[in-house]
Length: 333
Ligand code: AQP
Image 1 (cartoon, helix red, strand yellow):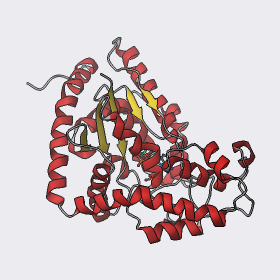
Image 2 (spheres, helix red, strand yellow; image 1 turned 120 degrees about the horizontal axis):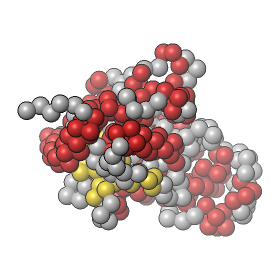
Image 3 (cartoon, helix red, strand yellow; image 1 turned 90 degrees about the vertical axis):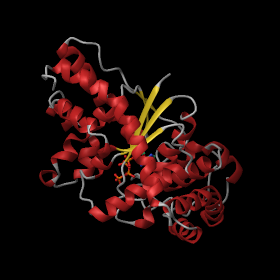
């Protein structure tokens, strides 16, 4: 059976982008593969996090993943900082990855912005920790949004260099699983930027805990153009915001952008937006209700995360031990 690993940062409340690009695709995988899903708090602190908010966001993330349909009986759901093996293998990978490889990572460039000198070194070596997250379980399949493709290529470069340098065939090749018609959901304010939970503008995203009025308001204010919807996708070229809203409606109604256009060609956004709002409210309402219910019992959430961490630890431990032996670290006896 394939082993699947994926992570999500508790850097805010999960967005519709996280949901359609990642979480929603995780749910069916629990039934066909051995799955580990990780709340990657160590990745989150590569950018400044208020400690109280990080703590609250971590529980909120656990509640939303469970409300979206992950089951602790079917997958291993845990918090990254609870399993030390991630950081331990990441150090080894810091010594394998080359500076030139990291210099090419577009996420670092995006997140560091203009003042690269002021970015944390953690943000720079983030892809090495991500490689360790996956490879410490010998996971081979990684469901991610389109934006994470480059980091997975780097994980393979690290695995290959480790195997080559030490003359072993130890770390496996990892494959991205990029699924869904809305693999990349864009900001509601700017169709050229991806929807992000840490975007300073709350209006740029739908959060999984937004109530129906908030969703309606955000969709109403979403940037669009004055043109009518065409009857084919090619005609949406150059209309990033329109393309994004069409993609979102397709994703939440289990349709395709082509079918959405076929059904709504000739309509303006004044007519399209209320339909999109209704579809989003119908889809996200039960998830929000589930999250709120789960958050009422924080000790139960913490227990579920502890049990998940214990399972993950047991899976990682022999792989880390063998990696240390390969490197030549003296075993503690
Ligand atoms: N807009 C998006 N469309 C599709 N997929 C997305 N993902 C994130 N944004 C979109 C996917 O969600 C998973 C978890 O992402 P993450 O939390 O680890 O980090 P991220 O990609 O940096 O997500 P955010 O929301 O943009 O977080 P911040 O704002 O903290 O940087 C990944 O599989 C990602 O592809």
